[in-house]
Length: 175
Image (tube, rainbow, N blue to C red; front, side, top):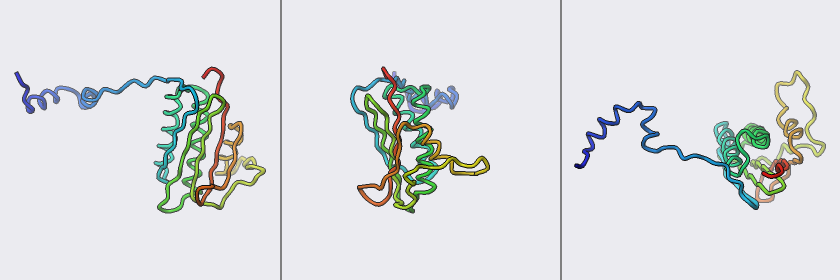
């Protein structure tokens, strides 16, 4: 006997609203799968706090998929570095109407994050950021990146105006 649409709607009202969507589209389990060889994730984001937040979340998720679980030290550290670099791109590298770019590369030896903005000025001095004073209200982001990353730098973009700030962490053994 075919089920009429109005009966489906009546049946759906018996299910709490929070479970109705899950019943229609159950979430797929995400399992970390170590991927051999280099892996690359690249995307452009709006130069807003929301874009920076989305970039950070997608980096953490992508690392998880590539075999570096959410609760791993590498995932935590690279997510923190991503948060600092994307926040700087939004705050200091914003050009109206332009997005910032993010590129995540994972090789057997290292994981690298690159964040590119469209402001060619405000390059970091070659000596790197100085330690901020305890009273400073800002200025800790790049100093934090310099302390957490194995290697990092800020360079002029070769594919257009602006700069790219990148940071690398060694890939953990066996993962």
